[in-house]
Length: 276
Image (cartoon, rainbow, N blue to C red; front, side):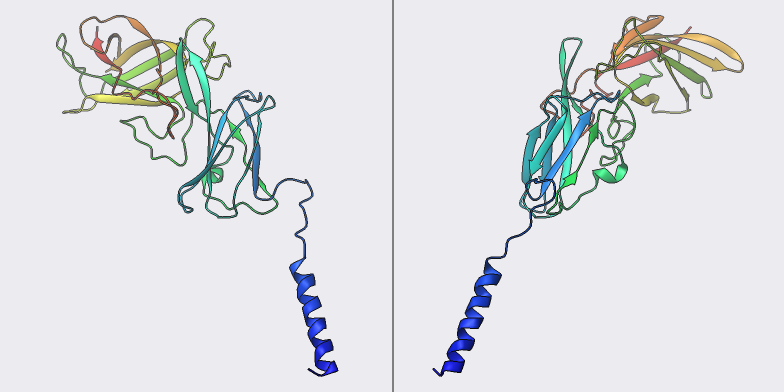
């Protein structure tokens, strides 16, 4: 090999060594690359400790990562660079001596979409939503899915009285009991909800009221037909005993947490109606 060719070879080799030793610059926050971090809060804006975070990537052979929030409601998860992640959060809650696993919400509807994580990291915050649509779930009025709040079912037939006629407007008042609190611990006192439905003709006399913030309520029902208002008595689960009103709370679905609201299906606990 001539001197000139030998010199060129060494320059080329040195250049390759320099290229192979280049260092990727750190991000300005000194965070690990491809990190998802954020804060979880309740409906009143207080940080939530112990919320469970799950990051899933169905495009990467069902890759998933988990984390738990600290005292300040903060979490951090470092993932691989593979794109297409979705992120979820749940909070454990005890109400009426029963254990709930409640799906938490996010600030914007677009936050529920699949996303890529840049090398500099990204932020995904959560909030405990008492009501509203769960954007990444299909809404089903009859099954109560797709809502952060609970669903309750009323049935317009029983063995003891005639059905209320078509065109009757039924009004249901949900009045929180004394010192009632929502599942996230915030006060429900004084936050009465009124929902209405109109009796239809024919079969299928079951009516569903969706997206009720979960707490313990006194339920009072009335009807209005041709300007005449009547009290409506209710019977829970069976048509054996009708009462002027009833106390009700949404029971837990059970398990370690689903992608729905964590509350019981309306088809497992419901009320029959009797016009007086």
